Length: 442
Image 1 (cartoon, rainbow, N blue to C red):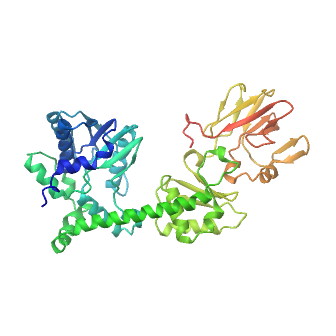
Image 2 (image 1 turned 45 degrees about the horizontal axis):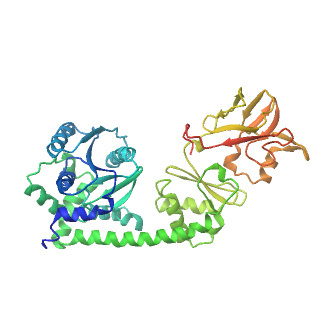
Image 3 (image 1 turned 180 degrees about the horizontal axis):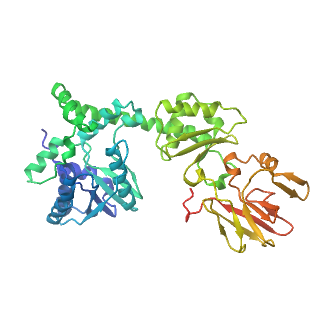
């Protein structure tokens, strides 16, 4: 092996160079080989290099009896290296994949702890990258999935960095043995019922026996695919720029796109652009589930189709696509008396309303559309509310959430809709803020 390439500390330092000015480096420390080597390397480098503040975090999942002894082991390792350790327990939700549930719980914790200008360092290595590529290939992943694990990605308010991703496991093990490090061997890693373990124990050894450079080649292919995904992302951004047009309902605070520019693209470019847009919002659909997108596009002009995805719904209304999740999918509670109209009224699951200008006389109440409402307009007489909403092209999913102001049985105002939202002669308007940070409506 080339001596320069075997200089593990120097290579690690090069891999983390971009984050040398971070406020804090936290090592995700399981106690296994990879994270033990990473922790030891960084603790040694900190003696001679100017590095950010170092600490470690151990996550106890509570999934097996053997794991109860791991926090103590991790504490002794960190004490010997002079690195502060934080030990956290998480609850793993039961599901079809215990591996995925444990990972989700672990990374949810990491995300909550990673503040601005913080870096979380994890110990995944080149062999892990090859396994990831193989695993996703067998699951029929596309370019995004086959690009493997990125060397860095946003996490919480900071960033996650996989600083050992270009280093083979054998080199990490050689370092650990040379420095007489002790690490945990997780018994579950021997259970071939887990897909990754089966690949690691049964498949990868056969491949490397026949092709010794197999894992290096796979990791290189993941890099090529990551570059290809980068080009697809650039294309998606260009296509989305045409669809991210302003609209009069921007005050809803919802992710939204104009449909026509997307509909004019080829089917492949539609899927590429929409995947890019949806990726931070929801788990992406598999190939078969994309039929929901076709159905949404092909629905009649008068329809209000919905495509239900893992973490929310995509609605088509008023010529646009709208992403709805969380409280937007829950019908709001039927309104309430407005006892103190001089201050804001919080609406359960639906933000809040407040007056500007003079406050109309009461008694006042907020309610929601039930059907059959009629509103008196100074210049037009009595008009059916449904027709008024149609005239203003109010998206269908909003109509049942729009706060309506009543005095007795008289409909005085419809929040936020110009011409319907108040009384110009009396000098007041009703404003609805659908996003309320205290209630988490987003």
